Image (cartoon, rainbow, N blue to C red; front, side):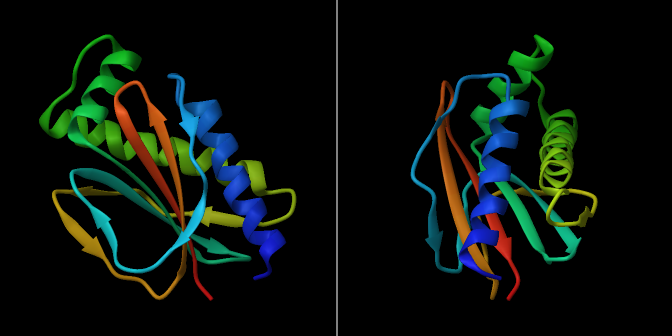
Length: 147
């Protein structure tokens, strides 16, 4: 996969976050990162297959997820409801992304996997981090592309 194709995937993901997330976010510099990826609180992983193969990973603090759910639903979610919300958010972002890039790259997304707690994610894929700053802290999006 060449740099222009990777740029297209990352740019599509950035546009999707800006469209789907209803709170103001400031995008920080996108950059390539080395494995392992570090998760501290909460995240969601969505795999994709098709013309390319990889994963989209969204990570944020528990507090970020709670405040964000409050913004969307006018109530703070916790426990299983928060996990469900996080999974659905990952599904919405990834589905929108797949549609957005479909003019040049065809992919199908898998059901979301909610990631909880502190963990390291090891991968051989090329990993790109796009951090966003918002009213509740940092929201991290990773685009992983298998070689």
